[in-house]
Image 1: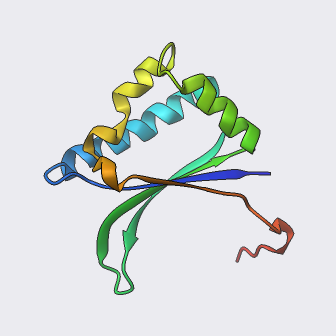
Image 2: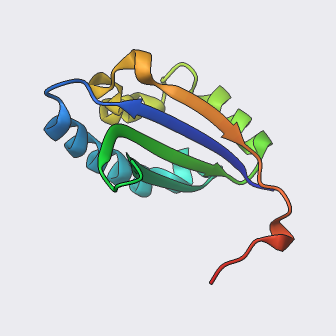
Length: 119
């Protein structure tokens, strides 16, 4: 069963352009290296939070879907020191543009998937 990691953040003042650029580079890097470095990932999706009027709140999220909790843990253990093949991954890490105190990480487990609806 899938395992979801949701990471949210706010961008440092004056970093919007650089943030947007590094996010694009990040997605490109992950796509090119998926089989080698990120095989446990089922998907990665990026969102900007809006309020009820459709106005941006200044908060962003990345939704990482892993094939399993075990896959998530295996990936995190392998990448923990940012060494070997993950050294290059650090070059596209967008954290330099985040307000670190704003970063939040949550974990979600899908339930009752047989009841889910897609239209």
